Length: 117
Image 1: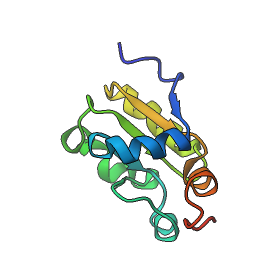
Image 2 (image 1 turned 90 degrees about the vertical axis):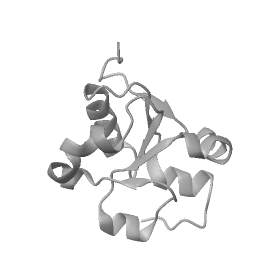
Image 3 (image 1 turned 60 degrees about the vertical axis):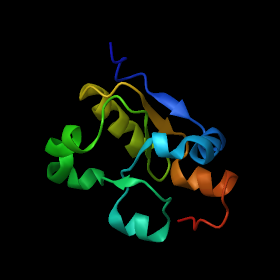
Image 4 (image 1 turned 30 degrees about the horizontal axis):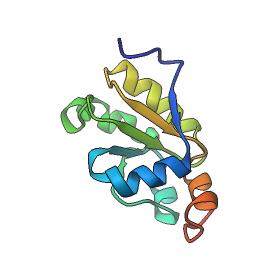
């Protein structure tokens, strides 16, 4: 019904950038990087939910986010965001995508003004 957690949908940075321009208000955006990483490089309108602070936000996820809205998750290179996507699917989120290559790929392919680290 919600897909298999091991099969995460992916979105490439170019497609994401285009969708951000045309559909940005309709997307739920989650950044799972650490606060010090977000301080270096960030994209606007992302909800910051560091994986290391899971205990602080996990029980509020279904209150603060809508499982029916398309959700795109970002991290530095795409590994932590993939873990978050799996977890969101297990919570009943229906349309979750992992940003391939994370913010690093976005900085390389879409917006070179974003600092790389």
